[in-house]
Length: 134
Image (cartoon, rainbow, N blue to C red; front, top):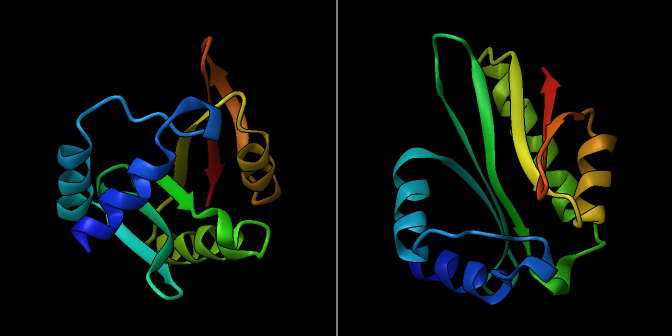
């Protein structure tokens, strides 16, 4: 799964596509494999995934690190399914807040997050910070 995650991220890792991972991609993939919960969508190989952290069992704050869909599956409800599934998992584990950052130019992702109950709580020149009460 490591190489599939790496290849999908590498394919879309530029700001025009709404993704910006500035760290080393191999290190990033290893970090999410070690520390995050990852849900995947497979269709003749990896076509989409969501990686989120639910390790803060003191404050019960979760963080969406990345949701990424191959162009082949965009607009087919896969992103909404992955996001809603992650929310169900977090609810079941007792988490209270779900946070994320999204590039301001990623209109489709922002609409997805807002339709799932996330609200913009802060911003800088590049990103919106969004949260959802679970």
